[in-house]
Amino acid sequence: MKNMTKTSEKQRSKPTHPTVKQLFNVTVTTVEERNTAKEQVNYGYIVAEDSAKVDVLTWYDGFVVELYADTLYKKVEKGDALVKVYSPEVYKAKQDYLNSIQYNMKTSMPEMLRSSKTKLKLLGISEKEISEIAKTHKADMYTTVYAPISGWIFEKTSMTVHHLMQKKDSLRLSILKKFGWKWNSTKRNFLS
View 1 (cartoon, one colour):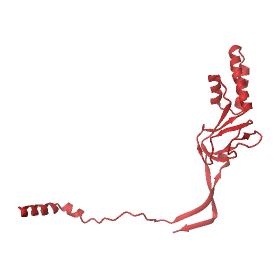
View 2 (cartoon, helix red, strand yellow):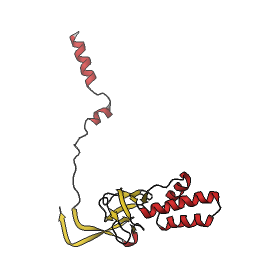
View 3 (cartoon, helix red, strand yellow):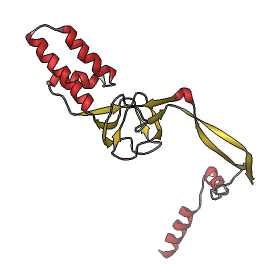
View 4 (cartoon, one colour):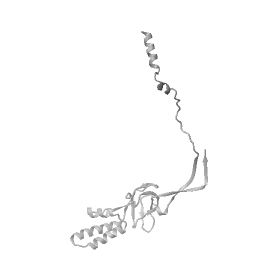
């Protein structure tokens, strides 16, 4: 019985089909990473295109309460909150708008309502915030400044909570929608 089991094992281990024999002649290699091109290191700096830069400035005095655009080169989308500001001037204008809404309900004075709304728009208050006042009949003492375009924060003068004045660039955020790369042609380094 031992002889029969040995021959059957030998028959099983031997391939009988010709294509199976061919597969055993394939050579196998290991995959390795190779550099087939030269590497070039270029020196340069990011340049802001003036036509693609939008400065976000406030049209009023106030205090920066919270700065959401807190780091340079942060990606912002159009409509993202950049900074929360407390301004007595804006708060008074919001109160005037709210009073004109309430007065217009009692006595028809659309000119007064339109005038107070225009004042808010001229101060740079978003349409979203103005419609929120009309809907809720409440004026928030804080004003949020939103990103007018999508891009990257490229420049900012305010790093912390502080007093801001409309005559100075005490809060200036520059948003870049596209930028270029300026090459420094004097330094080149080719590696092989």
